[in-house]
Image (tube, rainbow, N blue to C red; front, side, top):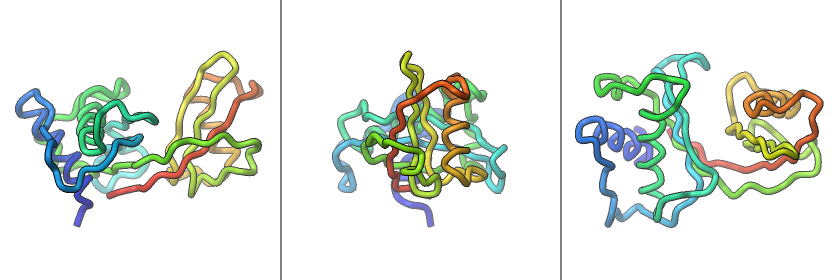
Length: 172
């Protein structure tokens, strides 16, 4: 059985695709203060190549957690520039994952990272930055995690970066 916040994300996508409006979550008993959220959409049973959308924010932009989940789920389904928008008939075939992010903390060394436990943010001196969520299949070392994240940010291999790590509750 999927987590209630995953069901909320799926319902938000369905509602938006049917009405063009965000799902109203005011008054939900399971709501709580907002935090960073990412929503990832994969084709059911697909490996890493089955990604259909992944969008989120380190810092929440909505007034509550449920509103943030709705916002990021709709963005993942309709606004990830890497993929065409999700169609209504595809929603039931998606594997939806919701990541509830703890605030990022700076780290001094790559030795303070563990890709199975922490997501990371890399930031160059010029302000380019990228994020990689924790527990990504195929990312097994901290060095690999940093290299992939630097590529996402178009940061040179030998360019120095500031590192941040964060934990995330991963809901399926």
